[in-house]
Structures are given as C-alpha cells and as structure tokens.
Image (cartoon, rainbow, N blue to C red; front, side, top):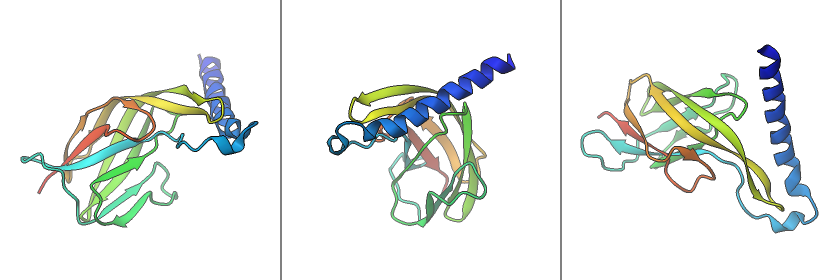
Length: 160
C-alpha cells in the first residue's frame, strides 16, 4: 500500500513539473492565459446575505513560515488562493477584522490540459470546507470545480 502511495505522489510531482516546463515550448509568446487554479471565495454577511468587504483580511498558507497571501488587506470582497495538488487536504488561517479562523479544505486533484502552448494546470474538486467558527459562521460551496479563478467557488459568511 505504501508503494502505491509513493508512486501516486511521484506521478503528481511529475505532472506538476511537466506543467511548469510545457509553457516554455515552441511558441513561448503564445500563452497569455493564467494557468494557476485557485479557490475564489467571496465574503458575505450572515443574516442578510449581502456581499461585504471586511475591515482587514490576512490569509496565511499551509506552512507557518510561508509569507501571507494577504496581509491586513482592506477593501477586499473576495480572495483567491491555491490548493496543494500533492495532498488531499490543506488548511488556511484567515484573520478577518483581527479574529482568527482556521479553514480546512478537502479535495481531489487532477491535471487539465489548457492548450499545447500553455500546458497543464492542476484542477480540483472541492469536497468540504470546515471552519473553526470564530468569525466565519458558515462556508457554502457554490461551485465544486476549482479551475482558473474566474468563478466564485465558496461563499464565506461572517458573523457581525
């Protein structure tokens, strides 16, 4: 069983490497598309369902020593952040208006061919979102397919 997991992990790593190097093929100037997939989440007020902009948003990735994706950002009505294609789950730390919540996402990942010039991207199917519930009241999955971030995938409802 462990060998099968190692082989699956190596296959994912090879796909990621292939995606990184394929855009540099015969026609490097022909790929203008964003090929990085990520979750797009909008902020909403619990009770009213109105889209809101929190006073301050910080978002840290899975590694404690990793730089923040957003650091005390203001005026945001939505955030976009990636998932780790080598793992079936990852957690993010959201600090919204000074209150910290940890959100864990579970998902499955699969390679998706963008084009011959642009190469591959890793897409995901979102299975669940679980929050610690400090300021985030509820997270609703709107679109389970995590692709190039043009559509809202989740709605993050915040308590007053």
